[in-house]
Image (cartoon, rainbow, N blue to C red; front, side, top):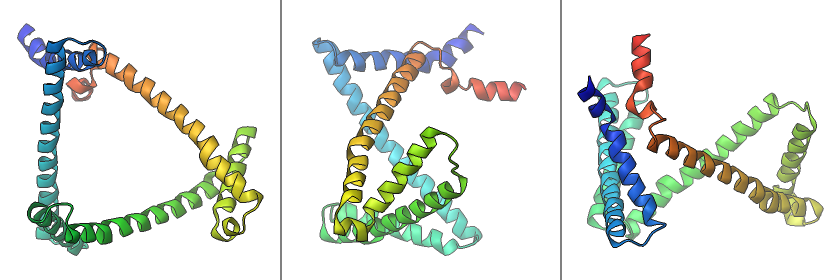
Amino acid sequence: MMGYMIKRNLALYVMAVLASIVILDFFVTVPVINTMSQHLVKWATTLASFAIVVGLVSFIRYHYTQVRKQEHDYWLNVWSILIATVMILLGLTLGPSSANYTWIWYMFNSWPYRVVTVLNALFIMSAAFRAFKIRSVETAILMAGGFLTLLGMAPMIAKGGGVLPAIALWLTTIAQSAITRGVFIGAGIGSVALGYRILTGKETTMKGDIEMEAEGA
């Protein structure tokens, strides 16, 4: 039983030690710790590269399975495999900075990404309009801010200038920056708290406790 617990917690102990070394590198100037931290960062980059390879293999296996089974719209899976293969071959032979690679990336990724973003924005606006209800002062302020921003950023109104474009610019720069910083600060505090729980062994999700409890239930 003791050996099982040590084996089960070994990954947590190793991660706590390595993470402490990397964190100490930002606060102390000790040659041994600084050198170890640099090597650990390089190892992490190498492991991330292997993760990309694993993701590529999973991508090809999934789409190949869909094509072999001839699922609905399987020609999209064929197209995905074809584009991925062409991009990989061009990147390996000509380099990612070549004109052919850049043109394919721009035409097949940049423009579709913009189209999907616009469509998602329209769907979000439609869903928000149908689901949003003004029930308090805060929701009324939120609705007014969004409405003024949409009007001020409209091409016809923004081109003519005036008060609405100025209000929209202030909302999207000053107000939005303040709110975004608050969200980032909160996310940073949450990340630090989660890291502390992991390093001290209080966060047991990574060890599979949830799965074990579900199986026991």
